[in-house]
Length: 547
Image 1 (cartoon, one colour):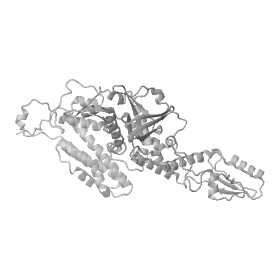
Image 2 (cartoon, one colour):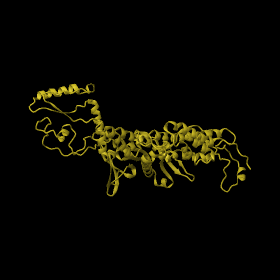
Image 3 (cartoon, rainbow, N blue to C red):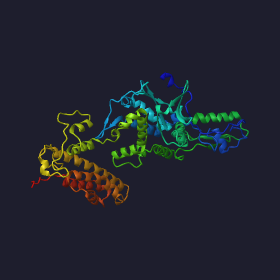
Image 4 (cartoon, rainbow, N blue to C red):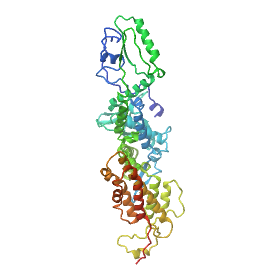
């Protein structure tokens, strides 16, 4: 099959979603300058190209023009880019978990650094794929196979030239090219759809929210024209009946010369010869254009189920930590699209025998949800001493080389297996690490104390910031007690488990110490209070002799 011919298309007729218009009348519309034409709003709207009262603003809305709206561009760029950069791997189920089948032929076609076809790399291919899913509600990719049925390439099908049709009870994929319409079997097409009403394909996002984008783009065009002309004297110049046409033209020319352009703004308009000026231009502030822009950005956030704060809306609710924000972003905006892709790829790219043998495709979302450096260091320290990770495994998180002996798994000395006595277990050969509170030899204990103290300080700092904001806004601190305590409680409970200290009442104790303070003295008192608490919990104590 000639792939060049197959994937050639004619871009001279892009899909456009324009407002519905009535059929044009055969009668010629009279000019607004005709004295017999009344100055009604309907005639003024028609003269200024605004359409009639019962029609929408005549702004052509399609995928390309809609991307000119900053909020939509940011949302599509964010969702498509974040989805494309997540590794899509072929996994095989094992008795103890799963492993990545990096040598599988499909794995070499779907990875970010692979080549799905001879023209694009994996990241570029998947980003284009998800852009189609975001804007059209459908994304299509054709699977090229050899005579044995092996996957040898993936090619994107443009969604505005692809449609699904049921023929003889069989669902088929139709693709329009310059050479005609091509038909593909659905087993050879990866199809990710958005919300579907007909049960065949997803709804076109831009078409579904056409009126919303019409308002946003119209407001943008109005602002562009307003600042380009920079004059508040827009309107209708009414002349007295019988005024000579030459006099009217001179007055129009005078207005354009003296008031058009940014360097001639704010001049005074003086009319003579019985001319009357009717202002028709609306002040941007009175038209609430700032509110329209914010509301439109919020609408875009709703379309993609993204927190408005991710689109730059500062008065929107944010999360207590970046980890929570990323988790919400994944659960609300990305998870359904990623799951749809992995399900389609598993069923279309793998054979039935491979799926029965435990092979499947899935995204590694840890690339998105992974924590910051301090949290990673804490996780590594806790994981090593509990036997969950080896030192070399944690070093690989930071792209560091392993070292000899770093593959050893350690277990703490003070933990015994169920039904196993401490004396019997102590005879076994084992490796041990110092306790997290510093009891024992070596300097590792002090390092762990520093990590715990830094983690707790981060939680208390977020709580102090939240409390300070409420006091600065003259709001009661106790009304937000549960939210402030929640920031600290989970972190301190985990530290308590690791240090074998009761930290269940720490958050309550700290909050009680700041109740009644004003905004000026809150921060100093709050910091002093939590430092005393941390000193009490994390200060090493002399080890007790064993019985």
